[in-house]
Length: 221
Image 1 (tube, one colour):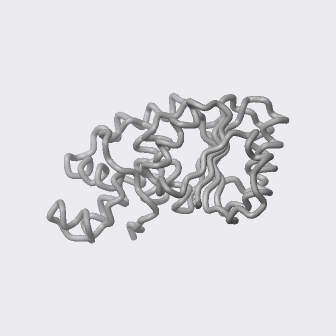
Image 2: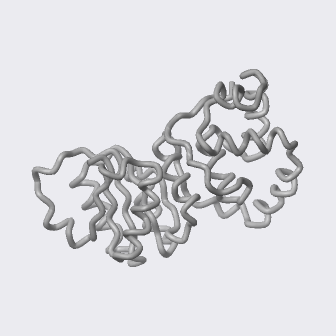
Image 3: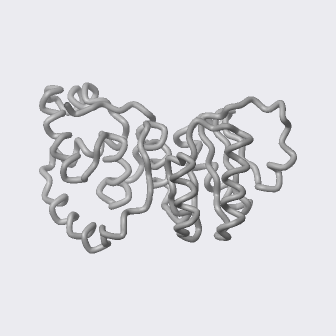
């Protein structure tokens, strides 16, 4: 067992588990309700690699669940899914070293990309208040002006392809792929391939159906 999902609502728990299975080994995922956490065997194999905690929207209860589950599973990485954005819960997560704080309403592609981002060493938190929706939207027209080749490379980056694999598939040198990647990262305000994939999926800039990157990340430099 390398991944643990804690979510109270059974149907939502199943839905999130299906998303996790897209980027994690299905046989290594344990999905439980918060109530089951109290009855977990102390002999369970720990630490786990990834802990995903679904919040209820009640701050005190959610903070307790996050703290209790982290203490029990001793996870290497933690992703928290919220139904209501609560600054106190988000602050607790940040202080505890939680790598991601994401809305439960995220579409499956965005959630899968966020898991991959966290697994690749990135962080995923709500945009600062200074970055308004209008500011995000204003970037879209610029991104739509990408060349056909850059759009093709962006799609392959989201699929988790390495620079070498992209070069071979597209028929250009690795150096040229890296040059395109640097431009894409700059336009997406992303630091690496995993962040670019998450942002591109969130903004609807890529076609569906591609696999999210699974920790195989190249630097464009």
